[in-house]
Image (tube, rainbow, N blue to C red; front, side, top):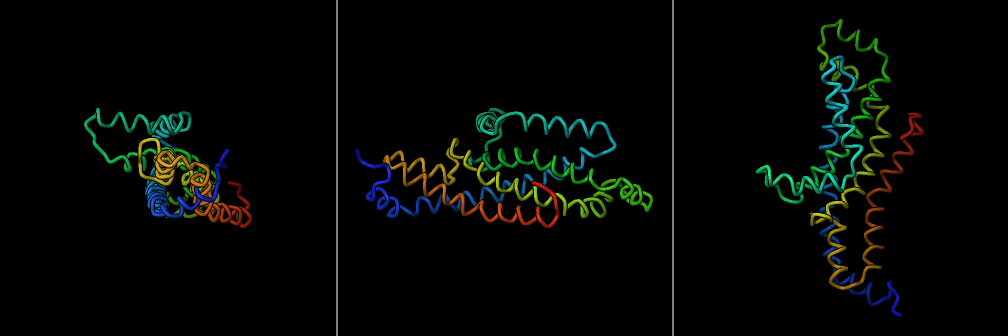
Length: 223
């Protein structure tokens, strides 16, 4: 029986390195865009979760509970097949970024909410007494103080987000996993392909994971 990691399979992979390079580039781009979306949603919904208005808190809980308690794969599947039925036609890459960004936005919202709640309520009261609006107080007083506390768990979420971009392969999103699956299906050389994919994800994730541990040591906050 031929080994799944036979040398001739590695030779074939190296000769087609451009396929994996293209997927690697798309994974980096999708992770960056999804993280930007997740941060925006996370901050907005995290602030809503600490608001004094009941409706804002209800909106926060609906978003967080629905997203966190349904699988990412199912969410991306319904976005991919559901949006066209609503007359919204988006490239599959954008659908994947949207799905991953919305998914991790819910987790970041909880991180932000916890960070805000850790700041003494007197800070908000003092800001309001100085004429700040609720959103102004959040922007200039509360969030800058909470940022140091939420940075380690946010970095950890970035690591998880990078790995979860592999869900784009399910909708032919052009990411690293999709290119590896396509190449392996054509050649049947799955062993080398998945080893290389794993190493490339490690290259992206390991520096952030190391940064998370260092931030935890400096702040004393666990991710």
